[in-house]
Length: 613
Image 1 (tube, helix red, strand yellow):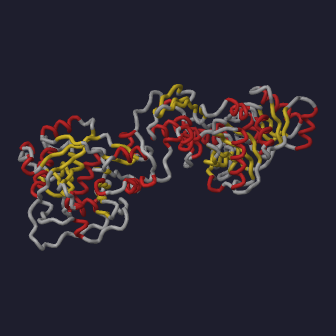
Image 2 (cartoon, helix red, strand yellow):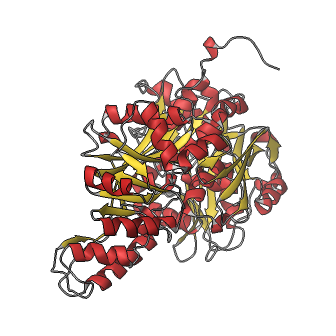
Image 3 (spheres, helix red, strand yellow):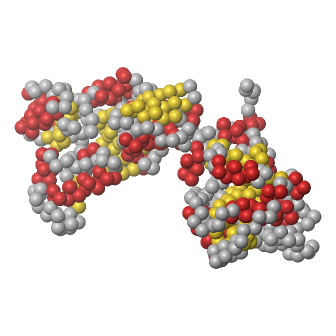
């Protein structure tokens, strides 16, 4: 169901809602005798106050822009659009001004408005023209409404609640007509709105909406017959004209309307940027878009949603060229030209990251650069279990967690050096693996990352369970996350007391990796709302110390809602797609193109100063 319509307190005076008319006519166009009671007014049909008039049509609302004295109120109404609905604001004075103020939320509908004069000026082409076996009548009941919705759905239109369609058809604000064939099947529909009945329109106008037919069963000319019948009824009510809106690309319909005597007007419609309207305001997908990984695609989607031009310059590298107005920025996933080479280098070398964070007064584990000398063994003996990792690298490559013996240390250093000649040895700290995304020195998202694990079913062995879980993770991440079956996996399984061919008991949960890296099967759990303020403050301090506008900071914490923490590393290209439902892509594009940022409130005309060209 659509939301109750309200732009404030609805009028209770029937004369104000229905308008003052010298003569009333019923839904069929016949005059109604004076004193006949008016039909009941559905509570959600019309909302009107000092702001303006809004009419519920079932599939969405008509917002009559000429009845509003302040564009701020129009914006508020359009923002209250119900999910799955399609609201339309028409007859708004200076609609381009409103859209220019809210380009992230609203757009000018790429449609043309046509007007058919009625009364003495009505073209002869819209009179008569009956089709044998086809009858045009008013929508009467739920069966008719169901049939109308079936036609809407077949033609890719938004359907409407049955009770709303039936209630609307019973009032004189709507002329909801259907075309019925000889077999009694509804094969077409049209909706007319009488502006005088809705808000006492001084221009005595009307409009028509949702003219459509079942193209499989409707005889040729059904659309024209519906339009003619509607024009007849509006003519009988003494209306001066009827307007319609048609997509500029619908050349066939436009030719029909022009042949029938409709003429173009300068009226524009304003709509909200919602999923239903995407094809009307989003550009065509750029070449190479389908080859982008999820981390680049989320940025491209957000940019296109705002009307920013997107060029895919290297799909396999995730590189984009974004342009809005005179500003162009290149990105690679969440890395952009706004991140300096110096800031990148600070994150690239984990030893430099540690030093800068330490100098900023932040907590990091004890560590040292591996030298192969006795000092490495002395460090191991002093701090206990350690983590050995390449000083430079990503995606968890070459990292060994939980090194406890000199022999294991030698092997771990040798593994790390396969990825980078410089190796870092760090004290192993207990806790959950926390990733915090900071954009423009504000915390945007936080997530706990957990190592890959499997759950026994009493049937399959460990190897089979890992393969199944790996395939699930790959499917969920577009192939980004898989669990490798390597020496580390076998070692972790062995430490838990199992072999790879053992059948894991039903319900038994077994971690199969030491690190929580997404690329090795780790899972991500959003904890943004739980993040302790001390951790959030420390992360902002870290981003400023590194002087980096976008970063993913990795920490170890006893719990995300506790203040204790240590920083492990900083990433200059965090995966924004890993943190839904947090608005990571939105904040990233805000950073790149602040002029496209959605305002917290509409501008206040009264508070504006000066003038522009």
